[in-house]
Amino acid sequence: MLTRIAVAPSGFKESLSAQAAADAIAAGVRRVVPGAELDLIPLVDGGEGTAAALAAATGGRLVALAATGPVGERVGTHFALLGSHGTAVVEMAAVAGLSLVPRSLRDPGATTTYGVGELIRAALDTGVRRVLVGCGDSGTSDGGAGALQALGARLLDADGFELPPGGRELVRLHRVDPSGLDPRLADTELLVACNPYNVLCGERGVARVFGPQKGATPAQVEELSAGLANWARVLTRDLAVTGTDLRHGPGTGASGGLGAGLAALGARLLPRFDVLLDHLDLDARLARADLVLTAEGALDRQTPRGKVPAEVARRAKLHGRPVLALAGTLGEGAHDVPGVDACHGILPAPMALAEALLRAGELLTDATERALRMILLGARVTEAVRR
Image (tube, rainbow, N blue to C red; front, top):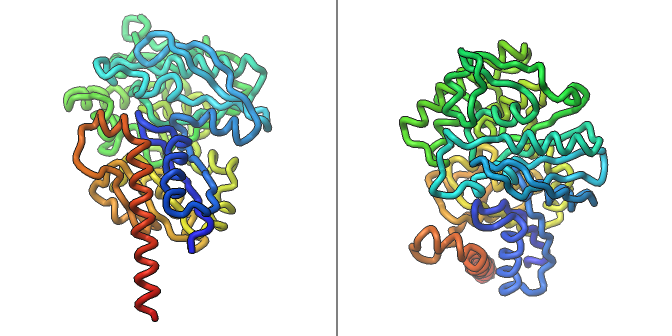
């Protein structure tokens, strides 16, 4: 009997926030098990919705402002002040996310994280000296160069001229002048919540893995890879970085290499779920459930590499709880995610991506209903066979 159901989804990129996904799943559950006790746990991974979710979970608040967006235009954005610990949360996706890059301008060689640095400065203006930067859903591949420029660093070419925005320019970087960096950074605890599987350089480097998703051609991927390798080399030399391998260290490739740029300023790169889920009491809530439902836009071989459904499934299995994962698309490896007992795609028939994105909430609700009816049918068949 399903009496307690935990609903712990991620957001669906460019379509549903984690909260909207949780609400859609809950609507589907109520069609089948109207009396079920639902515990909605929308989960964030550092990407879209992170600041709002953590503010809500801690009794904090959002601070609205304008900053430089990924294509250089001013955008409305925000950061969070948590209700405890004197901590600000800067969500990079809120100012440099892929959703802020018009499809006609999706060139990761040109987009910038300058606004991320502006948000960090604005957070410091409130008096906090602990800033958590959430990485995810980025539309950039500049290694965090823009963020460092906004914080006062000068990035110079061989002739002493300042580099323009964009990751494609990093191959021309000759020297970093840190003399103008915001002095408050020296007294600030800078934490980065990131996916530790994302590294800056190499065959699994961020340009090669995520560049095509942001609009990079094969030639641009190689251009960005070379630029990020040069970025890591110059940063390590000119900022006297010790103890962190900016090329291959865990999390250095987060958000198009923003992890590496902030690590060069002394930030600690931390596994995102260790940082973010502590505020949600997730383990205890999963332990109380009869069934755990999770979801994300795509379930595939990348899911075990730091995605929400894999983390939910891992934690649920510590308490012996069954896990059903719902996804916009089921790719290679979808049926092999550790801890996920079953998975279900939300599309009832082939459809255009634009339509699927527009109807994602409706599709997720309907898919949840279908999946739960199958689960209950299976339970009845099992009971009949036992008789």
